[in-house]
Each structure stands twice: as C-alpha cells, then as structure tokens.
Length: 235
Length: 245
Ligand SMILES: Nc1ncnc2c1ncn2[C@@H]1O[C@H](COP(=O)(O)OP(=O)(O)O)[C@@H](O)[C@H]1O
Ligand SMILES: [Mg+2]
Image (cartoon, rainbow over all chains, first blue to last red; front, side, top):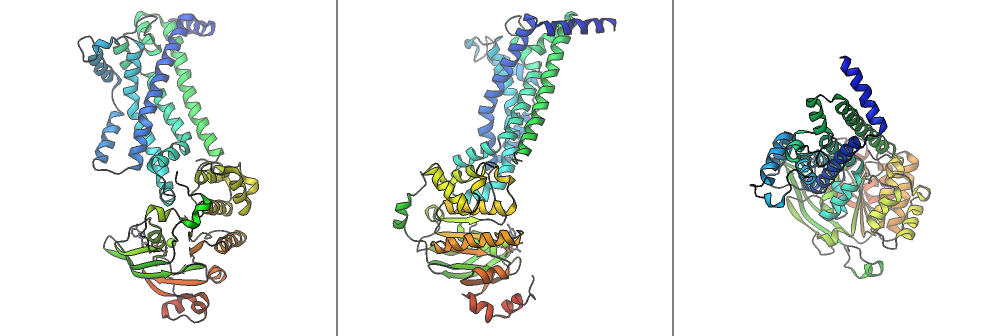
C-alpha cells in the first residue's frame, strides 16, 4: 500500500502537468464516446418517438427486445462487431478493425438501445399529457414528434448524458474492436486495464481520476439540467 | 400548410347547423352515452348541464371527433367530421394543456409564423396576458393558464369553440374574466358549446341549455325556459340541488 500513495502522487502530477500521452488518450476517449452518443441519438430519438406515439401489432415485443438490448454486455457487442469487421467478416473489406471508427460503431450499438428505451419512456409520458390537445389541433405525426422532442428537451438531455456515461466508461467493446493500440485506439478504460496489468499504476490511476471526474461531471450535469427544467417550469 | 388565409375563411363551408342523431357510446358493455339527438343552430352559447358522470365530456369529445361514437351520426353543416371540419373547431379543456415553452411560443405553435407577432400581441392583450409573453407558460397562475389556452384556441379562428368546464377550480375573478372572453368570442360569431357544473355561470352565459342525465339528453331549449320552467323531474331536481349523481 506504500505503492498506492506514491502512485497517487505520481498520478496527480501527471494529470496536473497535462502529460501529452495522457491528454491524447483522454481526447480520443471523448471523441469516440461523444461521436457514438451523437449517432445513437440520431438513431434512438426517432425510433423512441415513434414507439412512444404509435400503437401497432408487435409493439410490446419490440419494447421487450429494446429493453433487453439495454443490458447487452459490452464485450459481446465487441465480439459481434469484431466478427463483422475482421478480415474474414462480411465488412472486412472496409478495413475498419482496430480503428477509432470501429470503436464508435461498437459503442453506438451498445448505447442506441439505451437512448431508444429511455427516450421512449420520456416521450410517451409527455405524449399522454399532450395527446388530446394535439389531436384537437389536428397535428400530423411529424408535427407531434417534433413538438414532443422539443418539449422533452431537458429530459432527453439527461438521456443523452446517460448514454454518454455508459459509453465512456465501458472497456469490453472498445478493447476487442480497437485493440488498445498506442497513439491510435488507446482510450481511458483500455489504458487503465493495460497499465494496471503492466504495473504502471501512476498512469492508470491518473486516467482513473479523470474518468471518475467525467462520471461525476456527467452526474452533476444531469442534476443541473433537472434543476433548470424545474426552475423554468418545464417539468 | 394547414392554415386557411383569414380572407378565405368566409368562403369555407359553414359548420352549422349541427345535426347529431342517435349518438351512442358503449365502453366495456356500459352505455355511457345513449342515443342522443341534438340540433344546434347558427349562433350563440349553448351550455351543457348535468350531474357528474352524465356524459357531458364524452358528448363534447364525440362532437369534436376526439372519440368515435359506437353508433350514430354527426353532421356539421351537412359535412361529416372530416379533418377539415375539425380544424374549424377548437376545444379548451378543464385543465389547460400548455406546452413547456414561453407564453408567446404557445401561441406561435398554432399561429405558425403567419402574420406572427402582431396577431400574437393582439391575442395576448385580448386575454390580458400582454405582459407575460416571455414567461414560461407553466409558471402562470391557473386562471392565466386557462386564458392562454383560450387565446390559443381563438388563434385558430374556430367557427365552433368547445369548452369543457373551463373555469372549474378557478377563483371568482378568473371565472369572470374567462366568461367575458367567451362572450366576446360568441359576439364575434364563434359558436360556443360549453360544459359547466356551475349554475350561476350557466345563467350568466347560456342562450340555450342542453341538459344530460345518465348519458341521455333530457332537455334542450332556451336558457330562460330551462331555468324558470324545466320540463323534466330530473332537471327540476338538478336545479334544486337534489340531483347530485
Ligand atoms: N374511457 C372511459 N372508460 C370507461 N368509462 C368512462 C370513460 N370515460 C368516461 N367514462 C364514464 O362515462 C361516464 C360519463 O363520463 P363524462 O362524460 O366524463 O361525465 P361528465 O358528464 O361528468 O363530463 C362516467 O361515468 C365516466 O366514469
Ligand atoms: Mg366532464
């Protein structure tokens, strides 16, 4: 445990000195996970909205599937993406394996169900409140969805943060499809895993601190968004 | 676009008279609205009265096309309840459904930019919310929220304006303000169909009264006659406060 105190000091020094390797890793982490979050929102919000306002045969089954996909183990997602992107796989010709793009794909698959399911819930509650008024105004389906997305903006922002939080913290998917290659596909979680295994606790701890700060920051933002929404009488 | 330019409105087919025949609604084997025949003429304020659970709200929603009757027919000015007809109607609910936006944005939602800000300002002034344009709509008091809901309904220039107990749970001053706006709309040619549980309000506003009990239309006639000389025992009991359910 002597090591631990020493490592922590070194870690803090690394973080505070703005070590370029460390910054590069943090930068790539944010870039990959933010991109995955953006794509997941583009896919998940419209699907969630449609599920929220439509009733069709098999809708319950779709909801069960979406909810089940929320619990996908990251490493399994990684494996599935790997099988598709590997040289022998159907998408092997794209040459994407062990690139940041592959990591974005894997994380997108991981969090799209989360964004879909959570936004469906948010928008369905809102729709229950607005439905009669909107039907009275003869709004089209597109107009309804647009209004719901806008009026649900605060709650949907917390959905986005939840997706991002899950993406940035996972290690299983990105390590399988990214390979944790230095200066190319090394992100915070994979670097922590590697450095810990190598015994370089300082870098691991430094990254761990940053990751924790990001997680706490995301949580704080969620709280702030909730507070803002309540203050603006949006809730 | 869904708007009809104001100058074309006169050319659109009139919605009145209303002719409803045999309106019936059954849910779960229960007959909630039972064979209502209703004719409404060209103008004025019709107040729908009746004890709780009489079917007043269900009738209003069927007339506006929010609920499909199990049986019966509705014709507005000879037209069935098409989207076109429904767009010339507006409904104000007991509990106003306001968007999570500013007061102004709640009006813009139905005005859609068309001759936007001038119309919006006129409407807000009309309902006494001129100073509240930038405020979040849901921060308004109950009475102000209902006046905004009314302004939004009027913004669509409805030929028929339904109101379902719009002043329930509001303070007396708010009630009077809303009644004034409703009377103003009627004076400008909107056909008002208002559900109320407030006999004082009915006396103040009604040109004619439709009285429902147990899903049936029991009386329909001029307000004075209904209040002074009700034809049915049910209406007499209701007016005397003896018919609660
Ligand atoms: N969706 C529904 N399912 C079953 N019963 C309903 C439904 N909506 C209304 N009712 C019942 O129908 C009756 C008439 O309702 P309503 O028109 O709301 O009465 P009111 O005259 O008080 O407005 C009530 O007994 C009510 O409980
Ligand atoms: Mg009612």
